[in-house]
Image (cartoon, rainbow over all chains, first blue to last red; front, side):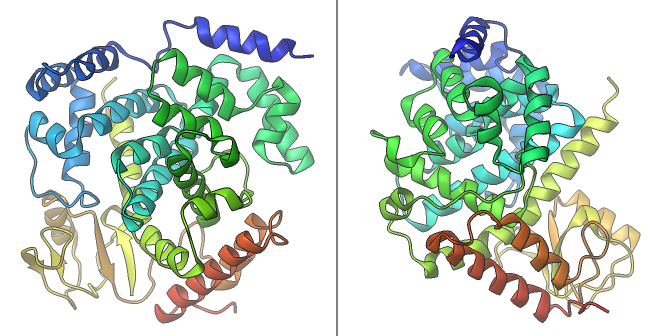
Length: 287
Length: 112
């Protein structure tokens, strides 16, 4: 019964050489876990990857952050925070390997990260960076499924088209698991902290979140808002139901949500711009 | 008025708001409103890393001229599974209002 599921889990846990986890992120991880290492040391590592450096600087200088002219990696890292840089290292390398038609998923992820940041800011929550990063990574399981079992992914897409169901329902049908669980396996095998892996695992089931319910609730709401907006492409076109547990945990009301929608739509214009530029850059790159 | 990514701006569009060096309105203004964009002006804004501008009217239409009616129909499509749920139906209402407001005040065309 759970054969496919176990098989998939084994594949994921055993993949030591995922292209989405480049050497850079390993080094960053070990340095940031060490209290004695300086931002400069980390910046030197980031600087060894030109593509990553360019993207970090671009992000630090983008109006969404509102900083004024950041030209060094170390300043960018101080301003963005080490965690954002780490997540960018993850997401930019994912972008490298993603096919043209996966740009939609990348946009959905980036949009959810932005929306999660807006919600966290509006509600005055602590650890905004982590929340934004969790939003950015919440659908990482989809990337892995598409990389590791492209046949299953094709089948999932076919089932969605045929039955008009949510992607995770189709995934359950085809591979006995879903992208949230797969993402959580991956987060675990990458030693990502609970505050990231729990929102990834529970963004479709906020009630199951025990230790990081608030963060999970934000990521869930961000996902819902981005899907309501129709921004990017997460695999299916259906807005998920807002979960009561998330609504209660964040003490939301219609007034707050209306303000968030307005603010988010404004920001999404810039996210779209960022995405278009990256795609142009990718097309223009000599290799 | 419409906010558009600079990458989509074309010559002939007219600025509806001042463009600032940084996103906040207390940055240095670099270009006044009512200015008509030209190719060289757009290139200069790009060099200054401006991400988006506000232009008069509603010149940019995503994916082939979607009217307010189209947008609302797509919205209904996205919400088709959750219209019975009170919380999510509330979000649908919020989004409907948002679309009407943003398309309305910017001279969005009605379906012909």
